[in-house]
Structure formats: C-alpha cells, structure tokens
Image (cartoon, rainbow over all chains, first blue to last red; front, side, top):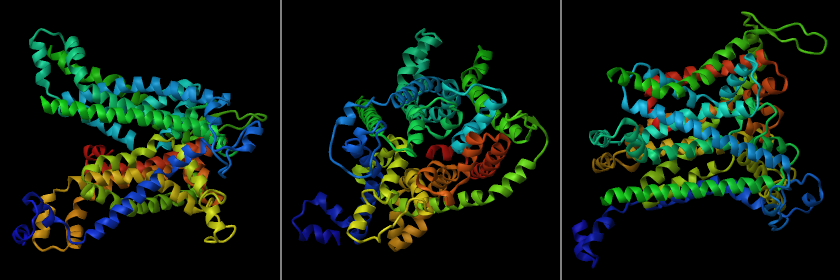
Amino acid sequence: VSAKVETAEPLPVELAPAVHREPKRSWKSHILGIYTKLVIAYLLIPIAVMILYSFNSNSAAATQTSPKVSFRWQGFTVAWWKAWNAIPDLTSALGNSLYIAVVSTIVATILGTLIALALVRYHFRGSGTLEVVMFMNIAAPEIVLGAALLSFFVLINFHQGLLSIFIAHVMFNIAFVAIVVRARLAGFHREIEEAAQDLYANAWETFIKVTLPLIWPGILAGALLAFALSIDDFVTTNFVAGQTVTFPLWVYGAVKVGIPPQVFVMGTAIFLAGLVVAVINVFSSRRAARERQAR
Amino acid sequence: VRLARRLAPYGLTGPGALWLVVFFLIPMFAMLVLSLETPLPTVGFKQAGYQFTWHFSQYSQAWSQYHVQFVRSLVYAGIVTVVTLVVGYPVAYWIAFKGGTQKTTYLFLILLPFFVSFVIRSLAGQFLLSSDGIVFSNLERIHVLPQGFHVLGTPTAVISGIAYNSLPFMVLPLYVSLEKVDRAVVEAASDLYASSRQVFLKVILPLSVPGIFAGFLLTFIPAVGDYVNNDILGGTNTTMIGNIVQREFLNDQNYPLASALAFILMIGLMIGILIYARVLGTRQIEEYV
C-alpha cells in the first residue's frame, strides 16, 4: 500500500514511511494529548495562585496590624514585594529554613556520597542491610520518622530546636543523596583512576583531581534534591522543632489566623530560585553530554 | 594494603550509617519503649513523668479509641491511590508514547509543583475550594452552583488535596515503566493482528505493572500518614490518624499513647513495605524513587 502511495503522490520518498505509520485513530491520541495538557495545567494552578496572590492588592491588609490575604482579587500591586520582610517573625523563620537547608545539605551530601561510593565500588558484609535500612528510611511515612525521632529526644531529654531540626534533616536526606549519586556513578570507569595512580598520583590526589570532577554533576544533583527536601519539609520538622519556627511551620501556623501576602512573595521567590537552578542544571548537564559525544 | 582495602567500605559508609542507626533505627526502638511506659501519678498540677512498664494497655486503648481514624486513613489513601492511578495512567501513557521530543518538558512541568512549598500547595487548594475563592464564587454567581455550596471540610476536599499532592508520584514511576516498554514488542503485537485495545490490555498494561506497584507505594504510604491536607482542607469528621498522632504528641503530650499509635502505623506499613521489597527487590523500587 505504501508503495502505491509513494508513486501516486508527489511526496518526497523520505516522508512516505511517516505517512504510512500515521495511526488510524489519531483523534484518540489527540484527545489523550489534550487531556494530558489539562492535567498538567491543573497541577500548575497552585503555582499560579501563589504568584497571583503575591500581587493582590488588599486594602484590609494594609490597615491591619497583621495583614491577611483575602480570597477575593482586589487589583494588582507590588507593595508586598517591596515590604517582603515587614513581618519579623516570618523573616526570621525563613532565615532558619535557609540556614538549616544549607548546613544539612552539606552534611547529608558528604555522608550520602561516601555511602554511594562504597556501595558502587566494594562488595562488603552489611551492604545488603544498609540498603534495606536506606530503603525503609525513604519508604517510611514522614510522620513516623518525626514521631520516632521525637520519642528518642524525649527519652534522652534532648533539647528540641535548631540542632534537632538539623539532625532530622540530615537523617532523611542521606539516603536520597546516596541513591541519586549512586545512579550517576553507575557509568563511571575505574580505569581512569587506575591510570592516574599508574602516573604516581596518590589516593588523595586521585580522588580530588580525577574522581571528584567526574562525579561532581551527580553530587550536585543529590545536593539540590536534599536542599529542596529540607527547605520544604514540614511534617518531620514540626515534630522535632520545639519552639523553633521554620518557614513551612510559620505558614502552617498562620493558616488558621490568615496568611499575609509576604508568604506568597517568599514562596514565589523560593519557587523562582529553584526553577532557575534546575534549568541551569539541566542545560549544563545537556551541554556536558554533548561535549562528551563530540569527543 | 589488603586490610586497608577491606576496611575502606566501612570507613566510607561509617559516618552516614552511624547517623541512620542513631537517628533512624534507635528512635524506632525508642518509640516502642515510650509506648510501653505508663504515666506516674500526677503531683499537683505537673505531670510527674513516666515509668517504663511492660504494659501493652496503650495499644488496646489506642486501637479502641482511634480505630475509626485508622480505618478512615486507609480508606482515604486507597481512594487517593485509585484516583491518581486512573487520572495519571493516561498522562504517563501519552507522554511516554506520544510525547516525542517534548517528553522532558512535560515531565519537568509535572515536577514543577515541587518547587512550591508543600504547605503553600495545600493552601492554594484551600483558596480554590473555598466558597468565596475564585472558582466557586464565580460559579455561584452565574448560578451553576446553588447558593451556600461548599466543599471545604468534606472528605472530597481532603481526598482531592492528597490526590493533588500525590499525582506526580504516581505519574513518574508509571512513565518510567511505560518508557521502558520495548516498542518492537508493541509493533509485533499489532502486526499479529491484535486490535489496539488488545495491544494495550495484553502487552502494554502487563509490562507497566512494576510502575503501578511503585506508584502505589509512593502514593499510598504518604497518604495514610498525611495530616496537613486534612488540617487545611478538612473538618472534624474527616480526622485522619496522622492528625491524632500529631495532636497526642505535640498538643496533649501524651507520649505513651501517641507513640503507640505511631508504632501501630509504622508496623502496619513496614510489613507492607518489606513484603513489597521482597517481591520486587529494593533496587527496582529505588530506581523509581
């Protein structure tokens, strides 16, 4: 049939197979495509809501001591962006979140990367157990992680505050980092390291100058995930925070009394920062892949 | 040198493993210990503390007092899983088979909500579902909905809130498993005169089962323990077990009862997870995670 089409129509030959392969019931996949785009749009609505309400001019909010966002749209303003730090408690909560996210990401990334290196390179007793523990750690619902850690802190009379939040965040991030880094390590060629050692590099030099640059994208990806999980964490943090307040905790506490627009300003800022970093990461890893192919 | 090589993996995993043991495994045990304690008689107004006893009474009390919330959490999580599977499967299917060059873009868009704080996402749900929010107020104004219509505070609001949060966790593993389906097998089936329905039911669907299992795990378990959505979107008659655990721990500070509740939840889910890991292997599930 396709041969007939080729001769009957003045189509370039290269296009003919595409014509032949065109599914008969393309309207079905057409509907599926529209449906998929609708679902994606639905998923993006809250983002739009958040960005939109960070610009909602709210006359009631301006006059009250604790401004609240009204559900009604009252016009566009950038006032909240200018007054993003007008609520001291909220600003310090955001500060706590950023501080814990940075510190816990650094620690969890180092510990997780070391685990990943060991799991990829060595066969050792206990590696199976370690994998099961990491799997349980990831699969366990957050409420159980938080409740267990709080029980532990209560039993040993450990003060709950910044330090306990930091401990918790490292705890739930190690396994995530280890898995992400391990996935990127899978295609790593040991021969390169052996070559370096043949050229009289010692173990440390080999690691710093050869191994680390090669696995760096994987480490970065793990660190980004850890940072995102940490800055957004509510459930576990809520259990172990004591009197300390982080950004998600502050927002949660404000839900009952009313959310000030500054929350949406900060949320939008975090969203945009995450977006920029993710896009840069995607493009740089794509470029790296292209360069590798070119070689 | 050989000894160093034998010890190297332990040196590398040591710090991280120690962190997991001390702050993950031991706390699980601590939770068990705490749940077996009984309160000492109160002195004046102040709670005098707790004493360790081998009393399992907290467990029977926890169950008799809160089995309604346990069952409700399981039912809600079950509905959420089915809803996200039904809604998410066509999406994953279309992106995997018809997404073409735009595949990564679509996946990126599906992941985009994760850049927004979880609490704010639930809050946006409140904005949308609230009676004077942008959707329902306008629908009421043009008389599509009756006056006084409300969704907030109903099970529907809670379930749709959790489903919204879980949808990406269902779509991604489904996509990964569908993407792995060998196109040659699909073509072979249609060459052998299978109708498109048969191709789907007998070839594609069975091959995507691992993705369905992984998606189930990733949505069901967090859904059972969720309490944020219920707090923000629900009412008193939609209380889930997570709300009870949180309240007993943080507000009432009834640690023995609270840890008994959390322990029941954990044991139930862990047994499920471990059976799962046995059947599918942890590697495969981690891949999807």
